[in-house]
Image (tube, rainbow, N blue to C red; front, side):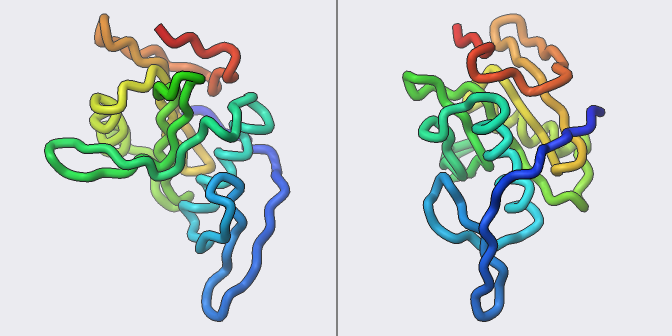
Length: 152
C-alpha cells in the first residue's frame, strides 16, 4: 500500500442551513461536503493540477450498466476520443481499501474498460494498469500523468 500524498488545493467551502458545501470545479456547483466527497475533490484537483489531466475530460458519477443494473463510477478520466483512461473509486477516509473494494472497482471496470484503476480513501491508494488482452494487472507506485497514459 502506498501513501497518497495529495497536495493541498484551493477549495471553497460554504455553509447552507444544515450542511457544509464544497465548490465542485467539474459540476460547477456546490456539493454537500461528505468525507467521500472531500476525497473525490482532492483526487480531482490532484489529477488536474499535478498529473495534467484535462478538466474537460474528467467525468464524475458517470452512469453505466452492470448485470442489468444502473451503477455510477466516482470519477473517470477520458482520452481525447472519449474513451475511459482511468477509473477512480473513492471511499471516505474511515473506509479501508479492502479486497472487496478492489473487487467492486475491477467488476465495474469490466464494463468500462479503463486501462488504469485507482482506489483511494484519501490516505491510502492502490493504482494499477490493467491489461485486458493478457488478463493481468501491473501495480503502479503512482498515478501516471495524462501524457504518459497510452491507450491502445
